[in-house]
Structure formats: C-alpha cells, structure tokens
Length: 186
Ligand SMILES: NC(=O)c1ccc[n+]([C@@H]2O[C@H](COP(=O)([O-])OP(=O)(O)OC[C@H]3O[C@@H](n4cnc5c(N)ncnc54)[C@H](OP(=O)(O)O)[C@@H]3O)[C@@H](O)[C@H]2O)c1
Image 1 (cartoon, rainbow, N blue to C red):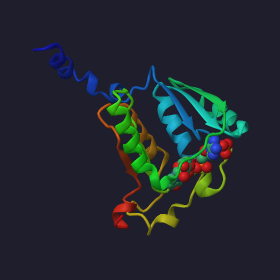
Image 2: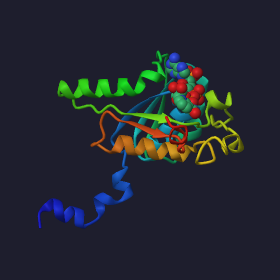
Image 3: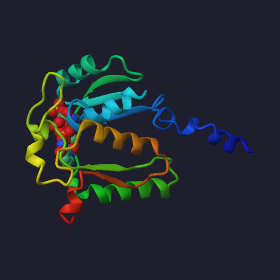
Image 4: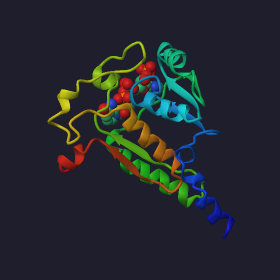
C-alpha cells in the first residue's frame, strides 16, 4: 500500500479535527466586531487560527477580545481601521473575476465568497448586546424562508470553515440562506 493510501486507511485525515483544523492560519476579518464577521472570527479562532478583527469602533473590538479570546486554540486580536465596502450586487462577478485573475497569473490565492440570507447582526437587528451578539425574532422569518428561521451562528461557522479549509473550491459563491433564493426563484 502507498504511504498516501495507508494514511487514508488510518482515517486520521478524515477526522473533523483534521478536516477543519485552522492551526497555523492567520485571518483578517473585516467587521469581526459583530454579526457575521464575529461568527466567522469565532469559527476560525476556536479551531486554531490567529484572527485579526477590523472595525471602526475600537470599543466593539475590545469587547469581542475580552469576551471571546479565552479558552480557544487560536487568538483574536483587535485592529482598528476603516475599509471601503464594495457593492453586493457585483460580488458574485467580482469573486469570479478576482479568482480568474489570480489563477491566470499563477498566484496561489483562492477567492470565494459567502452570500448570506438573514443572519442576526447589527445591520438586521440594529443593535447588539454585551456579548456583541444580535437577535432577530425567529417567527418573523417562519413564513419567508423554507428553513422557517433566520440563520444561526453555527450555520455561518460551518460555511466559513468549509470555504477556508477546502483547497479545491475556487471562485465560488456559497449561498447560505435557508433555501430563500430557491423558494424565491432567484
Ligand atoms: N446579516 C445579514 O442578514 C446579511 C445578509 C446579507 C448580507 N449581509 C452583509 O454581511 C456583511 C456583514 O454585515 P452584518 O450583517 O454582520 O452587520 P454588522 O453586524 O453591522 O457588521 C458589520 C461590521 O462591519 C464593520 N464595518 C462597517 N463599516 C466598516 C468600515 N468602513 N471599515 C471597517 N469596518 C466596518 C462594523 O463595525 P464598525 O461600525 O465598528 O466599523 C460591523 O462590526 C455586510 O456586508 C452585509 O451587507 C448581511
């Protein structure tokens, strides 16, 4: 048996701790101080990554660090800053264009994106609590989304880990919306 076959037969590389191990990785999460950015930050840091979180309001970033940078394999570091956002409508095209550019120029960078349905955040709930977490009423979305609820933190965390860990996904937009676009015929 080849060494690779023997490794596969041992099951080790198929274990979740190997498949989604973020140890040794460094991430920069813009908007990591709340909402979806904070969900991504926790997914990466809990599984071993060193995560720099960027936002304009330093007090939000500091609250995230004091609340979540403990009992984790990785690390969360606050980095105050302002970035310019891009138009959402163009993001699927932009993802493919940037990924194609990188590939044509033999730059070993994968570019993917996540298109979320409704997730609790400062944008959707207009506030967050002492944990920098937001809440939207589930019943509000019971009729609007096939999943009959808004997205949960772990729904986003699973998508983030997949898109980061899977080195064979490139130029893709992963829709995480509880079936909303499917039901809406989009
Ligand atoms: N939540 C949803 O249901 C949903 C659905 C579809 C798309 N999205 C998109 O997902 C992204 C994240 O939003 P969210 O829903 O998680 O809302 P959010 O809780 O408001 O998060 C946005 C974060 O980005 C930071 N930010 C905003 N402008 C910034 C700037 N110029 N420079 C640096 N940081 C900046 C904010 O912190 P500061 O104010 O401190 O800078 C905030 O922590 C947005 O692009 C949003 O349009 C969200």
